Image (cartoon, rainbow, N blue to C red; front, side, top):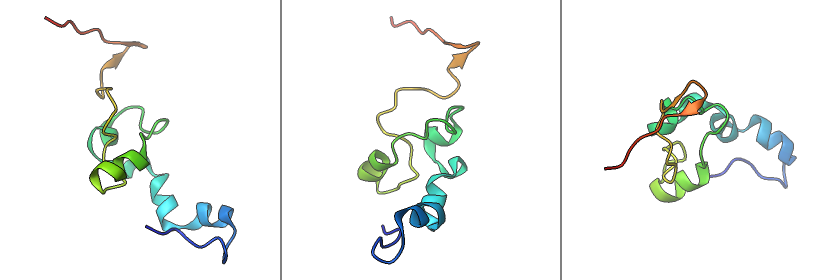
Length: 82
């Protein structure tokens, strides 16, 4: 997966204009739980971990324990374990 070559182009230009980095900054591209999570615009999960475990950089964060929709009224919902 290549985004550019720093020998040919400044890193800032690669980050700002490469199609890969543009896509990585778009939370609407996220899949799985990350794609429906209400915190996707501020969190985004670990794209590196998603890619390492699934081969898909836009897959859900495999180690995230948060369930989308479980944060209500500014507090996490409490669940009981029997």
